[in-house]
Image (cartoon, rainbow, N blue to C red; front, top):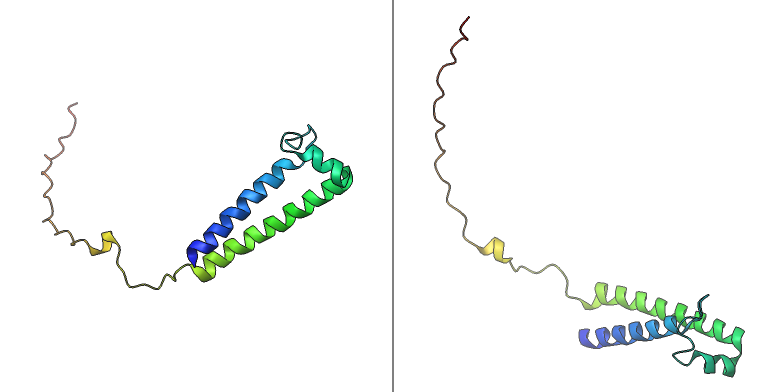
Length: 111
């Protein structure tokens, strides 16, 4: 089930990237390279822009909702009783305190 949702998420993300790249920016974008010019001739320039904008909004919403759904519902819960590697390692033994070397008494400076 998890693999299915991840595959759908990847498919939606790839479609979202393609639709965003097809949109014509101020500099022309990649719309001409990816066939956006023929799409513009089919729908008309204004309708193509509306179609790509709406498709981007829908795919972005699907992407975010699916990501939240996978995170909250599909992933296993964090209530497992497994211990991490650090927790399962043996506790270090305590060493006796290290004795500090005694310092000589301070002698007053000579005058």
